[in-house]
Image (tube, helix red, strand yellow):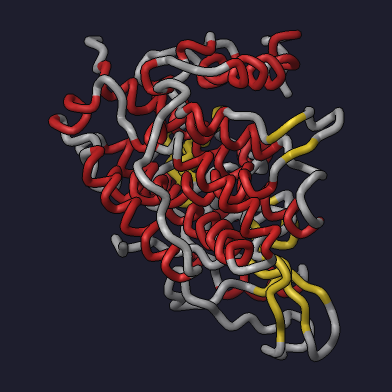
Length: 170
Length: 261
């Protein structure tokens, strides 16, 4: 396979990965969540580097299986390798703008940009946009989410926890 | 491959601490003071199990055996967790007459999380890359755990007389065993000289400084000397509670180790 063919094959694989969703937030692809770090093609072998969102996330095994099942269908690929990488670290600023919109459709307020770890952050309601909201629980139904309530439209909703690299503060 | 005993011992203490405390936490599921706490606490336990898996996986790569087997099939005396973390939540079991002590859960988790943060910050500078990478990831999630337990700790300490009385008893109990968490064990010198982790003294000083600040904020005084009265888990000394925990949590795995769960 020439370099150009490998590149085209990698592009095809990226298209296919657009169809692989986080099983716990099935409106957003793992690409838009910023979980895919790289795709390499070596002949019939496709290698995908994936960044776990939270360490203990039980969806990782399912995501791995779904990636393999999706890519193995691509013509010319007969083997798929999924590697969970410990570097770089997944942070919420890797989520694409499209991903943020899709999170809202799912009823999850996307994480804020430029958040300082440990500081409070403003969380607009994904339904009405009001920031008159209260945090009901810093933790939620999955590791990456928290539970809130909108005082304006009186809906409970969820938000994605901001995840950023932390400096060496005391 | 020549086995680096100091590194392996350090990894076991990191993995086993999270593993056993997450297990004790999981026994609280459905029994926490309110449903929001059940959601939060189980989420924290899930994160901590994830951290344990990370450290067991490094051990697996070092040829110590499969992560699942390290967690489920090792004899109690091969565990390196601190005794404080294996202690039962209280009288009874989660299935029968659980008389669990919430103050003990709050204080134990708070004390542990503060130390874990100091330990992870030190590991971020470790000479061993897999530890550096793991610590960076763990620190992000730990930040939320710490916020959670610090909130509980401060609120209960400034609440009713009953709450204060129970918290004070739990603080005394954990204080008397906390040295077992802070200690690095028999291989301390080598761990430090090889640059894997900071010295015990430095981490103890930071932990005490953090506690002094917190206690001052809630108008309380630090108890006297830290202790380790029930044995040093870092050298394989444990109490009966660990046997009970391990036999319960490995019961399903042992029925059929080949099955996929």
